[in-house]
Length: 309
Image 1 (tube, rainbow, N blue to C red):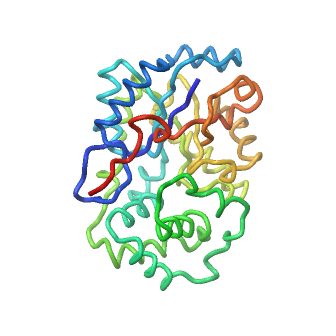
Image 2: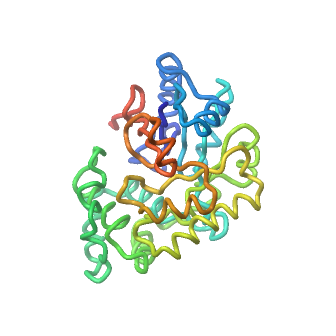
Image 3: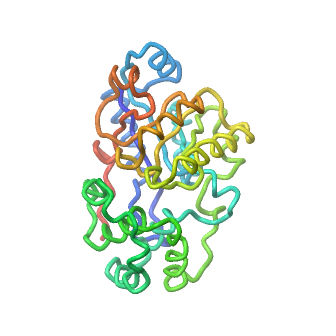
């Protein structure tokens, strides 16, 4: 029983030339590989595994961040092959109408040379901003498996982990003022409500918090709001159907706490996904359903980012 995680799945793009994404052609090749090697889990297979604690063989597809490419490119391919997946959506974008900070960082890195961006960040950032620099795992466990240059890793660690959320948005706003003059809209970047309503007929929509924050950086009260309000939004829009499920932004055991898992139990979440590259086993289903492991798609054939010229 293998959970597989995807983010951007799309064709080539001139607007974001250095974006790390899985090419849609390689996605289709990988689905064929999974089908031949492991097969795919059905929704009923997953229900039985959750009820009995016995893993079912096959692959379970998951897609994070509620990106527009999931409707434009992933959804048609899954329908073509009679497959399904779980799409984890951060709900803030539907109410704030502003692209999330995590994705604005992606845009900056996809448009601007990392060394230039890093130098500019150092001119903006102040020591008082970096309140979480020494948290366990925030340096040694972040981006260790990604093939990034040192400046890219430093930018992502500073803006995703080290910086206080009190200052983060303002710092990224300043970088956008310097480098991204045009407006990037949520309508261009994310799934719409109409997209998700159509997808929910045969796919599963899950919670990815409200704001896509690192949960371990938040107070227990704010963690509760992130979980409660994200599920409440999905319920109001009638997007929760067969499963009530969640996945942790960023992932890894350094990104959430035991209290986070207890809150998910409290809000009757049936299961949650972490990022841990191994199969789902009996002890996961019986003892820790709120931290199920899953692989990144790039750990399997056809899942790598194409080499850029």
